[in-house]
Amino acid sequence: MGESTEVRLTDAELALVGLLAEQPRHGYRLEAVIAERGMREWTSLGFSSIYYVLNKLQARGLVSSERPARTKGRKVYSLTPAGIAACSAATRDALERVDPVRSSVLVGMANSPTLPPAHVAEALTLRRQTVLARIETIRATRLRQEPLQASVSAIFEHTIALLQAEAAWIEGVLTHFEESRLQPYDVKKALKNLYAARSGAFEILDVPEMSFLMVDGHGDPNTAPAYREAVEALYSASYAVRAVAKATTGRVHTVAPLEALWSAEDWEVFRTRDKDAWGWTLMIAQPDWITFDMVEMALADARRKKPMAALRHVGFERYREGRSVQILHVGSYDEEGPTLERLHKDFLPANALRPTGRHHEIYLSDTRKTPPAKLRTILRQPVTGAA
Image 1 (cartoon, rainbow, N blue to C red):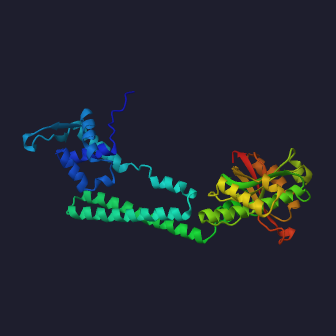
Image 2 (tube, rainbow, N blue to C red):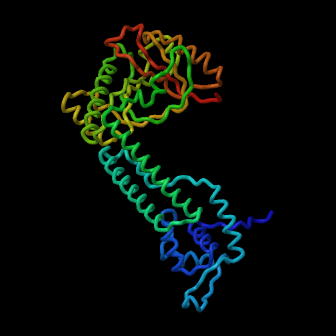
Image 3 (cartoon, one colour):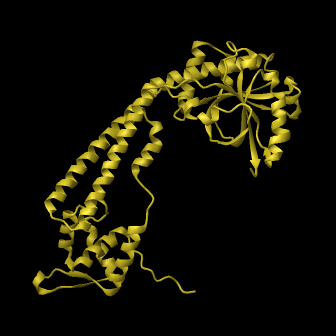
């Protein structure tokens, strides 16, 4: 099988061969046309790179040059038959192809949680001003060139449309930042599918990696002092983190509900409620903008305000469950057994699923104010398999 003979052209090369397809030109005239048409808005052609690109095209046999006397010794470049064919093929490909978006602003947005929202808003405001100024510059450039060929006019329109879309996008992002500043972040609303399970029906979902404050322990949660102390330490640390985040970033969030990972050597102890054999990891989710340094600062503040031995066991970790099955249990914790048995004995086998991680519970109700029969608890089990 022979190798492909298709000629590949970069955007800069295609821009130049397109100008030469219109008519032969020398380098200075190419530079003037590039400036007149605002082509630097969508190509990387600088004046110093024009001759470099022309020489590359000539070496590939796509461009030829000559020095007619009427041009005072300047080389005039024109397309060879191979260059004309390459220009036609590459032009059609450029019209059809949709390239991935690669913009530094996307990297900046990905990293924006590391900055205070006010700094992000300030940078985006400056970017929007620059975009709007560029739109006016391009409009003025277009006006000076009137009347224009339809293809040239379309280029200006496309460039302006892209910049207008970016200005509108920036405006939307700034509005969102302002709304976020005025309205506290609540993980239950931001990740509603994770914290709004349905009662009476198992559902399969993918749980992303999240940040948590965590404390490990073992024993009956009703009687083990370590469990109560861990809960108090977690809440103390979480409220301290919220205060530090507000002071350092200006962002406010609602403290998330208590969650727990449960484990035992024998799963049956959960069905039989042999609580002394249970191991647990208590945890409270944290927004993605919370950093290790913020947590360290918050823990130091919490220890100063209310010394607790359990605070030294509080850790800050990322945790991912991936594919999981969950259901909302309404009732006392001791009545979870039948639901868990139905999950492991019926639902998982029927869907070719196997448990892979620790049993997870999310406590949506305040036990101090809610009767046991009305407690709302999400029961979640990480799984693997075919379903």
